[in-house]
Length: 477
Image 1 (tube, rainbow, N blue to C red):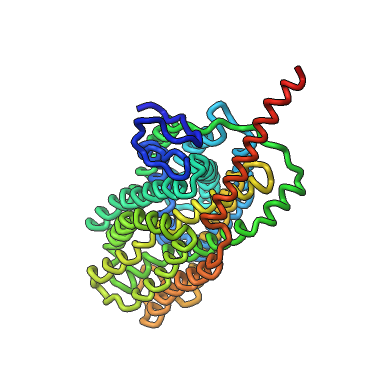
Image 2: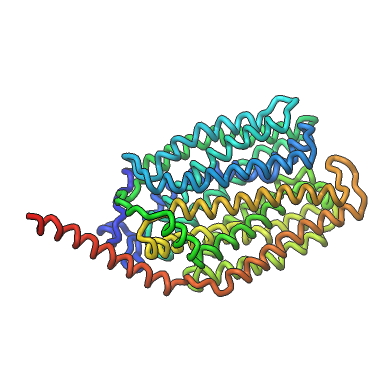
């Protein structure tokens, strides 16, 4: 198997065996799979950060709900600086490998080091310990994910092929989550006084082992398109084209709200499973069921987007997530089958929104290139990453503060009223969040037809630029 290095806009060479859309080559499945491989450990890292680490440091490490919520919010402020910085630098300054791949190599050891100290801490720890290693972890995560997302957007110019690329990414992320949850599920079935510490440590070791392997597979087998010189823009023009990009503003706002509601659900899930459903020892099993169900529905979401378009499919996914979460209120205590059925139902949507938001951003980046004359994929994806992470951090902090306000106490028995309020928080966050996303994306202006027109104009511009470059030396002679 050789590295894939033919990413021209022409159809595949004979023998590729791949159907084509709109004159653009369909990427071989092994290429897209190799590109998506690092998403497994990266997703395996994201889940415990929102689901396990806050509770672990609040309870087992003794930092308390308020302190942990504040630390996670403060750590995300760091992303306000690092996300746009990495996006801009990866756009402007390529290496001999291209714009994106070398960042994955630099980021991997930073992530592994921070993961070791966060997931295998030695008590006692302080809030500054948690904050310091979170800052390093988030820096490495930014250096990895933004170039990787930008690289994915640049693998193909085709409207539907981009959804396929991000469908592979989302599928790899969903696969990574059950894998990282397998060890905690076994540990929970065994139990013991160190159960929480052992399951967090198992997840950390999984990430430390898998991430370097997946990174090497990706950069070794998949090449980037050749870097093209970028025109310099004045700060005024650069800011004006970004600020005036209406689809960008709407997409970023919708993604931030979607990420916030999802993070709130993740932060509350362990508490709901333990204190409302009485299934704390089966929490990781329930999450496994949730993500395995989600994996099976990613192809369905892709097919729907091919037929109805990305925007309509996204609205449909959000509408489904408005209807499902209220069923958490009627799950009988101790009934694993009912809780599992609800997780399967909710899992239908786990991959849909992520695939569609990221694929739509690639189309928005084309619009930005048409208006600015500069390819700023990394910068635009940094906005998407920044708002989602900031929204998630805000959600974790606000959720923990809300738990304090309702009088919830982790690790102890809570009153019926407190437990009922806990479950209400679990339901309200996704319902309100997804209703807001539906309102924002209902008349999103960048659909399939509009994107096709943008691609035609970009193609004509590139032809004219190439012709001018050829004529200039001839005229000089």
